[in-house]
Structures are given as C-alpha cells and as structure tokens.
Amino acid sequence: MRAFEALENRRLMASDFAASINFAPLTSQRAPGLLADYGGEYAVRRGGLSYGWDHDKTADTVERNVTKIQKNDTFIGLTKGDNWNIEVPNGEYQVYVVAGDPAAPGSRMALDVEGDTAIAGVTRKSKMFLEGAVTVNVTDGKLTITSVGEYGADKLSYLAIQSVSGGSSDPSGSVVTTSKISWTTGKKELVPTTEPESAVVGDKLYVFSGYGDKSNGGDGWQPSTKVQRYDPKTGTWAIIGNMPIGTTHAAVTVVGTDVWFAGGYTARAGTTTKQDVTST
Image (tube, rainbow, N blue to C red):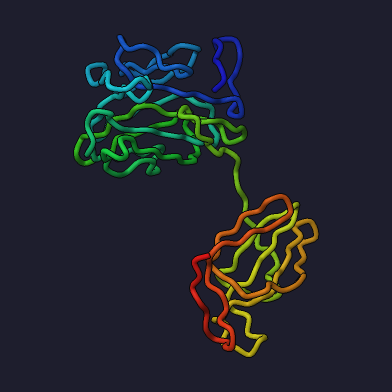
C-alpha cells in the first residue's frame, strides 16, 4: 500500500484514497506495511487520517503471541453494535476485511461495511480467519464497519480500503479487485450449447463441443463436435471445424497456441443420444 503524508495543506480526493490498518494493543509491534488501531475513540491519527471507534475499546485489543505473522497475531474483540469509522471522501470503495483469533477456532462472527455483509461465518482449525471483500458507496464522508454478530465474538484483525478508481493489493498479498465491471449482452453462438469447454488463444475465444446441437439428428444430449470461435473485436462467431469426437466436462489448458483436453464425457459411437464417461 502507498505511504501517507500529512493532509493539513491539501484536499484528499476519492481517487487518491488507500489505507491498510491492523487492530492491536498499544504495546504490540507494528505490523509491517499497516497503520495501527489500538482501540481508541475516533480521532485524527498518524498521517492525517481520522479513524477510530464510537467508544473507547483499548481494553478489548488482544495479542496472542502464537504466530510470527504480526497482523494475524492481534485483533480487537467486538460486541454487537460496535462501530469503527474512518473519514474518507465521498465515493466508491473496495473494502477487504479479515477477522479471526489464531488461538481460538470456533468463533462465530459477522461484520458489515456500510450495511453490506462482509463477513458471516464460523472459524475452524482448518480456517482460523474469515475474509470478505465488498464494494460500498460512501455519501456521508465516513466509511463505517459494524459488528452485527449475535454472540459477541467478532474479532477484527485487519482491513484494507481502496478507492475503486485505482487498484491495490490487500495486506495478505492477495489481489483486491477495485475496478468497476460493466456487463453487456453479446451475440449468441451460431450453435447454442450448454456445458461446452472453452479456451482463449490469442485474442479470440474458442468454444468446443457442448450439448444442444441437434443438427446430427439426435436430441441434443450427445456432445457436439463443432468448434466455434468468437472474435471480440468484431463481435462475430464462426464455426471453424470439428472435434475428432464430441466432448464435455473435460479439463482444458492452453500451451502456446495448442489446446489440451483431459478426461470429460465423450460421444458414444453408434448413437446420437448417449455419451461415455472417460478417465484419460
């Protein structure tokens, strides 16, 4: 995440905003790359950011000293209705939240960001932390995280906030997608299919086989052999050939310009309505 400088002499724009914060006791070692929240009430903090709780929660911060990953070793315990706020310019934000206790699996937790569910579940020995990412719109100048768990067991470890106009990585190293996605309806396949295989080679999409092709006289439930290609630049489809045998449910990978298939269901010779399950 980017470093922050004092904001007294400039106005922060929504497109500039990013923050990563770890929740920990005041005596804890600082988690690398993250700002710290020690459970204090809302106030101006390091770097000119304003954030904190709706009441003092310093007594609820915990460090377990059971893991070498500092951001995973600390948390702040919450009760239903606790609110954490951070001042942000109005706009749209991607918020990544991590909650858990490295020493106590079986914690039932539920956290909202701006009223949207970010985390809801129970930790286990095999999954000591719960993660959630939501995109929210802030209109009142403050982004709010709320404990909504019925059992008072929420344990907030760390979070990352990024305006959607930019892109960032969350503190654990995974990518948080912050770009907005818009969907449009494209042209239909020349031969409509269900459950086909597909691959992208170069700048084109290839669709192999699939159910639904009745041109061979069957009922559409034997895999087709047709190979269809979609060109996103022109928005056009073309049938470019046939598979040696119709196949569905196969694993597909691309090596250079070669498409490899493994396993799947193959068309059964001598019939137009049946298929075989393969293992090679």
